[in-house]
Length: 269
Image (cartoon, rainbow, N blue to C red):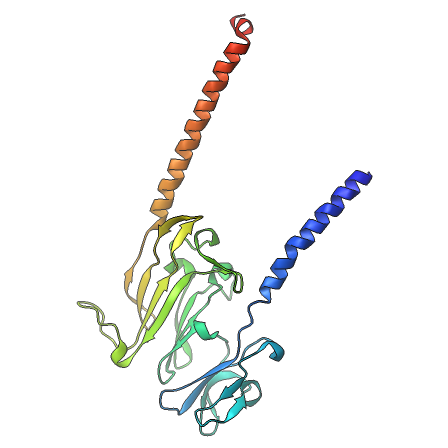
């Protein structure tokens, strides 16, 4: 009985130690509040962080005029505000981190990424990975399975900054003279370009990331360049299974020879 209790204590300690990094890693991701003025300095896009103010390093913001304000005190909701009187002209009932939000110069078009899409793809309200907004209203959304061939954490890079699987490598919004002009293809001044993360299993590289060109106004995919890592992964699995079957065959053959060598008479009888 004492041995069983001692073993149970050891298991309990191991479980506690294993749970500590998981709990602390969740606290590593603390997005800051921020604001972005429009190109003509007439409007301000405000994002108030949902974390406690003591962890928010971006709540103090300097306006184009040089005045410093507290975003969390001055603005009661996320949204687009006039800079002359701070009137909210477009409230937004969601928060997007600085690296997850892309906007047109007048904030008429917003593109929002969900960096945790791999972990939240089975949740009802968070199964999306990419959303497009026009004048504050959602016009299109995508799930990670729509853009990534193998949307599982085993085949995607991992980051310790927030502890999540990375499904996209980069995103870019272009407008005006900065649009990407592709011959015999789409010609628009409002484009969003997304490159997904490369796929691998362990240290075996399966494919580079997919590349998508979206119409930022409608969210529709205009052009795409997809890779097919499942083909390479299937070949690897088949090769491994073949090697395993061959190894089992050799082991069985060696054991039979050893058996006949050690007990020849019994086999003959």
